[in-house]
Image 1 (cartoon, rainbow, N blue to C red):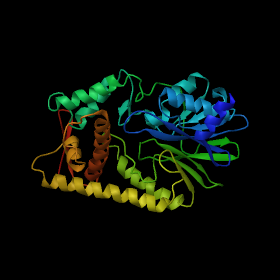
Image 2: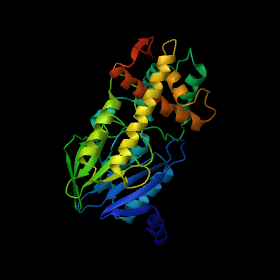
Image 3: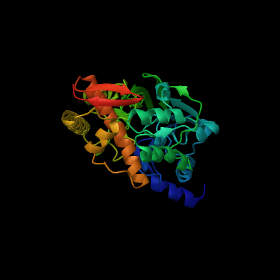
Image 4: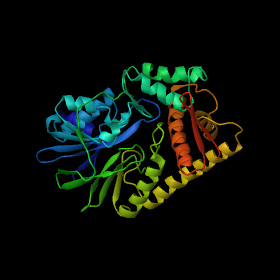
Length: 347
């Protein structure tokens, strides 16, 4: 590594705690354009928490960071907090170069979801689109836009290539340098999202569960996963058990400055949106699809005009789905299914 390369690496590699190096990575893709991953050098093997985007510039920056710290892929363990494209886009490349990958097997339950897809799995995408009320017959323009999004993703930034991995279970221990981490469930943003907790030093890597100034998306479009309720339970646990910890998120400012206040803000934001959706259902004269509720709740009733708007609609539809499922679970909404599409109405 040349002197110039080392100097450049120092600009985006930051030691945030003793032996914990933060690497800020970027993508040109709309919707999510920044993530922070973490390198912890060890005597024998080192740890990387998440990998960043499937993007050449992102890959180059990660490789520079590893080189600057003297870490090779052959001696690297990669802990993937969850299976979204910004967190494990480069996992397959690192695996090919000899890294060991760790991931919760729960994250393999869907091949198409809010923020990722697999090539050749169009049936899953079709099912999800029909669930939320986007169909080739009823909403052809939107249907084609979502179908074309996968085709237009020529660089595959949303794509997660297959890679071998060892399963993570809550309670599993990972030792690197001066740190002894325990895997903890952070179900909510995704069903199998997992964090790392250092009990002695009171550190918790929270992935996308708790973020400064951002309300995380509860990312699912599949029924009966109880994901928003799981998220609320997880936030309650973090507030009760880890509020005195240094919480290290994957996005926004690091660390989370006031865990209890940040968690309260997230919960209240969701409850406010849930109440708005309940009012929409209460005033509706006919059963509504997820897309219809989302378009009113988020003021997105027009067809998206660009990729940025389409990505935003993709995310708010997923968030709306989770809120409607929560209303259904609490008996504040009735859910029916007809021809593969879910409909919602007041009891």
